[in-house]
Length: 195
Image (cartoon, rainbow, N blue to C red; front, side, top):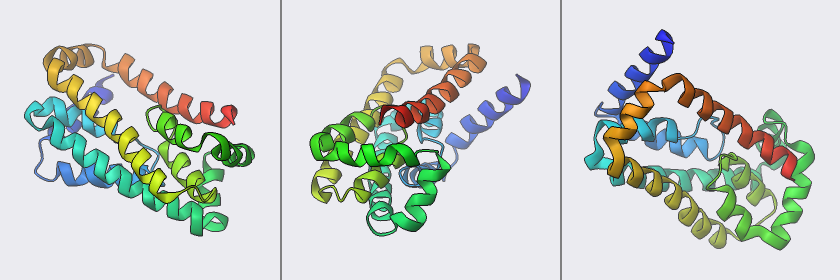
């Protein structure tokens, strides 16, 4: 519990650092293609540290996430047999990839829109979209919509209810951290068994 509290306090301090926005952009970019930790882990404390920047923070997350999604798409499109395959195997999703690709033929846009809002890792959507040679223009606008909606909605809630949410988080830090980890792992598991 004490270690978790120190980590939380460190992230809150980091959120106020002058380079925090750049680090958040990098995390958002990498999370869309290879990095396992979602940018929400930084977005939440950054908005709580300075609610006046909530929508700027959400914009950085959205733009960098979509740009990172293009990298994930390129990995799936051009390098699936090497790097893309490695990412898919790392997350244990090899068996479900073929079904996921087939789903794009019928539900492509909906897969991107729905999966971009859920705890299901976005990197898997981006790589699978490239591997399925899904229409790039549609992929980009669907990614902008879904990632923007996710990050701006979260930022708006934190902007509007910041202090009560901050107190809630600080009083129940272990519970919230556990729920976050369960949701993240649940996203991987759900993705694996849904397709």
